[in-house]
Figure: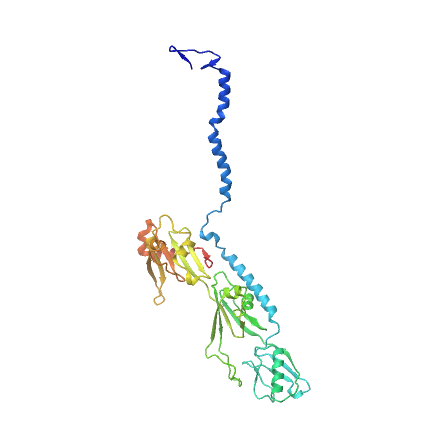
Length: 384
């Protein structure tokens, strides 16, 4: 407004020396500029939001852990495939104890007869100086072996031997432990470890990472040819890592089984993390039992809550001598800051992290932690 001598000069068509129409036009032209910062801010919000939406979300360590049922299903599918592949490669039937063989030596009827393989895997033939090992051989291998022996002992100059299988007796192989269907397999032919596991339906969800094959001492009372056949003094036991069988492709791990073998799949150990953690629960130790430390378990449990008293954590561990749980105090704060060594946990340990409101419960941590483990979810922790 224009001031002159303290009085305002007002013209109905002019404002401050500017026409009212022009004033309104300027207001209309300038008004969008007043909202420009708001519009720019809105543009950036709309433009940046999709970019943030495309960023990978931060996930807890459990987010990348496969459900236990899926892990087991994939493992069992691989066991079935490899068992089928080994079955194709296996070829001919392997002679075992109790089998009845038909032996025919061309033009030598006195050597042609039916013989039964004894419990130690040997057969007896007339004119032969000792028993002949037949167990573990295919009929074709036994044919070659008998032809060589007949010629080497001067019995037949150019022997032509034919072996036929008249009767085959089952060789029971027992599969027990953490498998889908524990059973006794009546193996009528050579059976490998993977084939036995496949016939038992594969491993169960609580299976550990190893397979134990126990073999009884063979009865050698009837054997006369024992010079080149070492006999174990005690039952044999083979511990095989399941991952070696499935991943290496080495036939040394997929061992052939014999009648009387017992295949046992031990259950996996479980470590519990309870108390002031984001994802309390029990974690199956399948592939990393020897290296499962407190920090790894805390990571699997989603880390501590805001009220966690890390310095007052305890490990509850059962004493094998007394059967009672003992408390091992640990300061997770110092462990996380590398001021103390990260201790390895054992199967069936309970790592208890109290919170600020539950420090009094520390004196009865055993009762509290054991109660908290009841009904907790079990998660596969083998691939951390």
